[in-house]
Length: 101
Ligand SMILES: [Zn+2]
Image: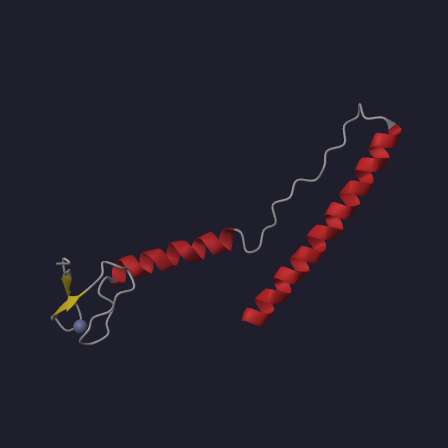
């Protein structure tokens, strides 16, 4: 037999079943059973999204002073490709965000 959890609804004062999830609502009035935890989670999620909206983690290839002329030229070419790749990817992400919104 499964253990049924109940939580007293702050809104209507009745005991409602809940799955111990932050987004569970009262079965009688639909009020959030654990509004505090729900808000805290929503806030932390929003903050996490805000920190890196659509950050692309790509390290540009490093050019060292010790590299020979040809190696430097080659690495500059790779950098150019990486930068345009990031630009295209950023545009796609921005476009998808626009579509989703
Ligand atoms: Zn209720």
